[in-house]
Image (cartoon, rainbow, N blue to C red; front, top):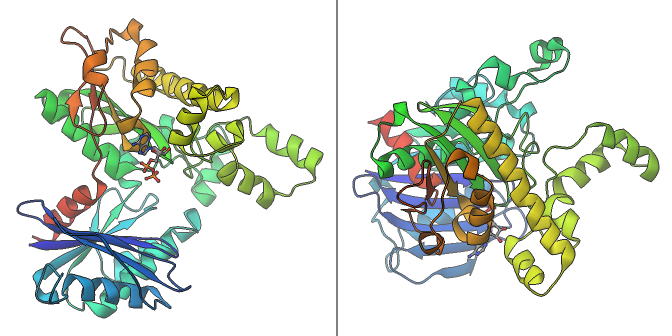
Length: 396
Ligand code: ADP
């Protein structure tokens, strides 16, 4: 069966058509500037990437353009829409309602809408993508795969904040965690690569991209993760602050005469690597600048590494041990210095990294020495494939 995987944002949409039997990506691409002027990128397997201007006043025209590209006589990879067996949608927030993926129907759409409050930038956009697909592909089964679902196994002591309990009862203020599809996929792959049963292993996954989070996966279940009510908590990220003393908001708010919306904008968009370095949110830019002696760029990278070290240490403590640590996403897969620096501080756990094996980008492999007590791995994440697998499992 061919499965169309859709990751829909407010003005963009990423897609992949995956053959579920071979797990091959038949075609992929993205729609950008939806509601503005519209740009479609399309790349068939083994073919050239094409970029074209397509009018996309709404997401419906964007998805229509994707379908036309997939079925194009010359460059398409399928003859007609009937060759799409199912659609898998990434949905950011499933609140406490969704502990796993679900078939999309009117009832589940209503439940997703009820989570909009928790992710006002993301969930409404995800739902627009779902509605547009329903309109253009009536009768094709669809599945929602949630970023939060994998972390719903966290125990209460990990997800309740030190706040008045009524905030949880009244407003569902708690830690949810994100990147769940990636943490689930990478932790499972880690167990497979090592060749031990998933449900007997203690695994720490470091998903380090623009957004970044660490999770503790004990016997196949997420027991803690660094993001919280929103993706702002935890590690220092590209532009997000991660953990800070909440009293800073009042202090800086008064000094700079900023209201809460302006302060949140600073924490989400102007902090993290960008804020510290005063240069860039992109790890590559900072590596280049640091190599040329830029001290703030180096400091930003050091703080990034340091925060990862702290979370890995915390999660080894939470699980009372760790069998494997996996690095994934843009920075985790590409930055060997980061992996080396983090592992250099994990000697107390019995971590020994092999410099030769670590000298690699984006390739699935073990990077610890044979006698390392804890295995360290590089596992490229593949959220689209994970969504396609979840979709297949539910529509079969
Ligand atoms: P997201 O999906 O959260 O937007 P990614 O997982 O694509 O982010 O990660 C983006 C980060 O990965 C950026 O900081 C970027 O510098 C880093 N990155 C991506 N590719 C490379 C590379 N080849 N070398 C070093 N860093 C890279």
